[in-house]
Amino acid sequence: MSPSVLRRTPRHGANLIQVVGTPRSGSTLLATMLDAHSQAVCLIEPYLAWLKHGEYEYNWNQLDRPDVKRFSKQQPQRLFAFLCAQTEFSVIGFKETYRTPYHPTFPSQSFLEQNQSTGAVDATVAIIRDPRDTWSSVVRRHPHFRGDTGTMAELIHAWNELCRWVERKKHTVVRYEDLVSHPREIESVLGSVGLTAEDEVYRPEGTAGYGDSRAQKGGGIDDSSVGKYRSTLSDGVSRFIEAQCSEHMRRFDYNWPAGSGHL
Image 1 (cartoon, rainbow, N blue to C red):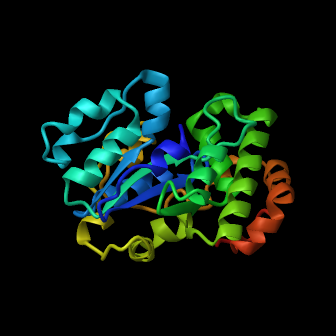
Image 2: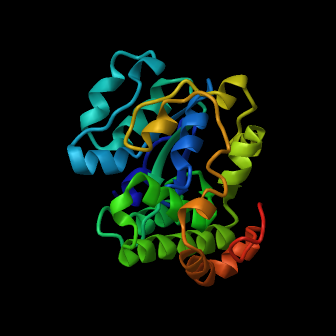
């Protein structure tokens, strides 16, 4: 995890991008949609997988290169360098979850922010999701976290820090709610990294990696999870999250307080 090493990657005309989002924000969905583009490849959390397991996964047949799989047990930037030099892709990307130093596993904030500030990546694409629905998704997926104020505080801190960073640096940002309700919102993201729209990105076939398994399966995109916090969280928990995130909730046009209506 060295921005200086990544910065030395020869690009050969390709754009190297990173996709970021807090846990349960839709970053895997966004990366999977980007990966479905014929001129792009986007790995799902290769740094986290490599650090934890010593290798990372990908649908190697999508690359149609029998020699690229050997890179799965090497530092991810070696694969990025190979792809930039040996393939016709114009965008080489990776998705990593944005975690602050308060998170006990793989704090990535400094790495991701330095990648952008030092020019180690050519662009950062961020996805933001209503923090109430983000926490709702966590407790629905992992019920043992319900009532875990420490884990909730970690997520709230990461959410505020990510919003503050992307606003300050004017990164390309898409809201999860807009992406799942109107998948053509992906077109602004594609344009920001030099790609044109293709039908495949609206219904991706799926990809391998270390992210959300449902998003990695691909297929249709639905908005059934938008506003799910209303039936998952108590009013007290929703109000607590709103109090902690109110500044950025206003800026990203999230209605509040709890029960005030849909987006």
